Image: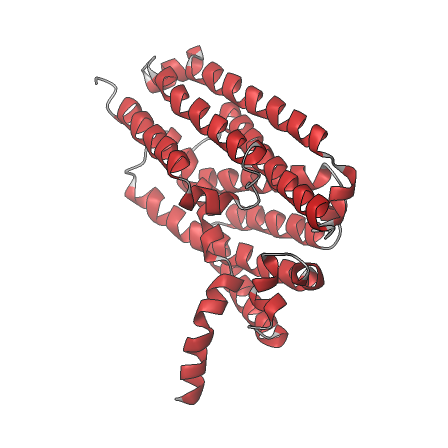
Length: 301
């Protein structure tokens, strides 16, 4: 009874340790099904939901390992020092036991779902382990590894849903992930310049001018690429509609708002927090989803 009560007291810390809020990233698994116009395929949705759980468990295991590796740096960070391991809320032995359990559960579930999906998740795990043990300290490479993680998510989603992954989808997801990673590095650099605390070693090889230039460049490429996607003859033929260009309004508005958060407000360190807390961003995302949904699933309208 006492151990049960103690476990309940630890529950908020455990949820923070495995970063449940970060699981929103794994919704990228559902993107191929949405773009394919098969959102109501029950069998595909059930497989994707199970894949979402598997991906989330493995990602959470990686988060625990990252927190352990960065425990000293996190203690010097103005916000990260409150993380469960850095603050001492969760003990290291408990964290490692939990990491082993959820990693095993996630990989086992992936194997049961599909061996190829298992291989995709294994690649994600391997890349992230390499990232945790050194590659995150190499400027530029750290950004591309983060972007690769999102590509692996949509590849996994396509495998489980039985949907082909288009070149357009790969390009757009890669560019968006790269943009978000650049914005996060800018926030890391701002903290380093203001407090002298080095959040990560790779910031030594960045400066604000370089990151702002990259952000401007990538955001412009994203907007142009998206417009080109919506008016592509292949896309128009596949979806039997030439109205997708309308959704570009939400993409442009969302990108401009994120640039404003990054360059004016200097608050781009936590993309998921922005997603949950920024009203303008939420409106653009919801508006894009509704608009895209109506055009794709109700083309006569």
